[in-house]
Length: 163
Image 1 (tube, rainbow, N blue to C red):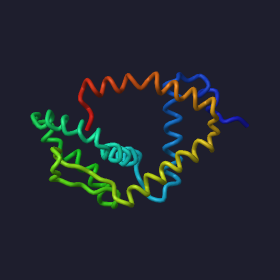
Image 2 (image 1 turned 90 degrees about the horizontal axis):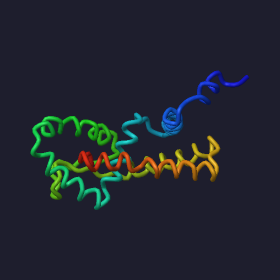
Image 3 (image 1 turned 90 degrees about the vertical axis):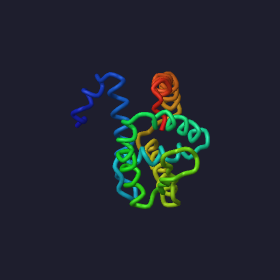
């Protein structure tokens, strides 16, 4: 018997399909990961890796300089840190509250954090095999990603949301 939602999925708009695909990948990763992490913790861990790159660090320093002038940032600094502190508590990152690079705080991956990120990457590749993504599908996805990337990039750049 066919899955009861096949007809509904077949009639969904592209934006809903993208959400289903992303949720499927994240569910597969979370179910098979050797450590329990919430979806947002996985995203945050990936973000720490991205922010370790020198180019992104320079951008963050500029953004922090602007944000320090805003009382709302100072008020919410503890909220930003709380999310990172949960990753630090389980040994995936280290937080430096007094970095000498112009940032209010900085995070680095621990060896355990790097291992977990490697595991996540491996699981994401396994998921591609499980859902049977072929080269043609990959090309279509790449085209969609490239065509849609500019929307979020321009928004982030305009609003200065790069932390």
